[in-house]
Length: 228
Image: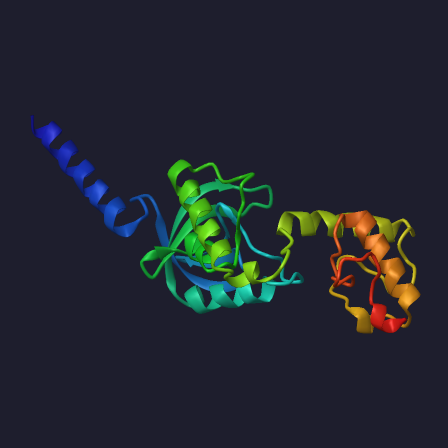
């Protein structure tokens, strides 16, 4: 009887912890000592530093539109502060993939709700939590918050894929014309002629499937018409 009593007490306390803290009892606490980008942090746990990748979300890359804003948001939220980390798994880079709680809410959710991140649908498998993230993303889209204020934001997984293809193309000598790079931020002022801009527009469209530099503003297939 006594054993059952203590088991009941333990489960009750555990449930209260989940209810009020939003993270279970096996989460650990540490201080954020570095923000690498919108979805990756280094957290000091005791005397050990742990690189943490936020679970279920994907922020724009630092070199991508919206990336610096996502990183700045995370810096404001957690830099130098204590956070609770609930590990979910470890990725191929050795990072701890986790839910991270700060200031009474999940940082993962705050990023999506503010329009600074996509739900990483391919890897978000945490049932109710991921469904909540999807609802937050939909609400951010409807309100045109953050990256959703743009006409056609490029998901970071597509951006990374395009950058890899572009790098491979450049390495093979297939995309060295003019100053064209599909994996860096360029605009019309970076080209010396309309022909050069058009070649870059067509090359990056072929490699990435998108007008990554937004050189064709009116969608008529002609880049940087002001240079003509």
